[in-house]
Length: 305
Length: 305
Image (cartoon, rainbow over all chains, first blue to last red):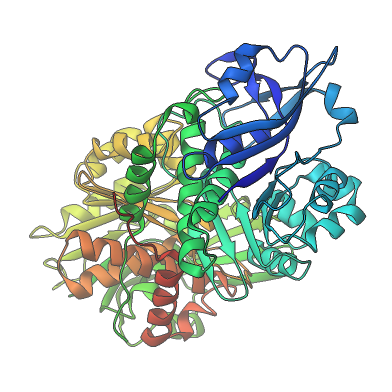
């Protein structure tokens, strides 16, 4: 089933201990869409500037990604982000953020997309997330990502969004900030009371866990040996989760657990190259192979009591 | 089968964000022995001073722990450690270390213990570890823990010890330092070449993984909600692993995986109280209950390919 993804489309300049790249394709909507498209058709909504040339458009336009919802603003400049990683890939420093065309972006749902059953609101201003949500007819299954910037800056709107979200993705430090709990399990439990039925706490290289009222599922990170650039890993994780859920269609414990491993696998590919170098060039067999490897890494049976 | 454990016996003064305690029972041999004794008879080797009164001896002397090898030095003072934890339980600051009787300690294997089949060398000077190892007749299955202090200060002796160790426990930062690799999977692989057949990398609240030539097993930490004091968690982890292995007797992949979960569970109990308050007061049923809960938390089946 079709999955609508709204988020940023960006140029990223990234410096890591090993290498640096300038103005490569990035953005939360891009990573999430590419991760999801291996399992389900994706409808991307975003904005870019005139500098977003056909070379970049060709990169985004994969077989399963419909970019009708990608607005190109004449004489506008594409959102630009520049960041630096040290030895710890979980910590990064933002050097420059230029909103550009993103500043006046108002996401518009193209005709015919209003009844899409799956929606992932990648990390953007919660006002835009709410705006897009209100353009839907019907009740899509809604996923959402956010960040410290909105938790601190727009807690009221964010709270309204959370009340309409089914599945929230949040990283460890954001979960602590949003819940005001130090312990992550308590944090997740507190966040569940804010609206979402399902909370996924992402811990970077330490994996992730999913919590609902009914179960807790813990996933390790896939052990990536040639980590080049973790930019987009969190967005790819969410895309992997939603791509699988939308393709399967059935939200139950077994599928939610499976979706976590798909998210983990897609995130691992993204880390292995700059920009979309890796995640754009894989296939479902490669994804499933890593999935099954993770199952091997965690395999354990119950003890008799 | 009997498991010999050598390590420190200590008084600890600990400050956490929630509370502080003064001169409570601690030490690597104490935590490891208590964790192991629920599954196998333990033979403890250590040293304490005259200030180690009957009250403390009664605490150590559990049903399954033989303290014949605990030397009490007349007029000596027990090893003292004092530390402070901040909000991140993985990071601690040592405030005071007083070696006291530990300074001139030479571990002696009591008569009749020379043919014990299981030996865990908790974190002490590698010269003492080697010394004790040389007192064995036969070939015990040897586990070992170490720390940055010895990796930096006595690399030569430590290297000799590693060549005779079957299973090395090491935490993440120590693994990076010993291997000179940033990536933990590479670090573990490098350490396997230094002697051990099995390496367990402990990552505190982020769990642990075990690597051999044949398999990789990743375990989450047990989600402790009332973490009071992580002191001794690593020693309890190792004790839990060795207690199970020694009780079962058979070193194979299945048992090694199971041992990791036992280690994880024993470490979780230690974190829930200061000193041995929690780990001294549990039973095998409680341990197995947590074991099976972890199995639920990670349960996932392979995908069809």
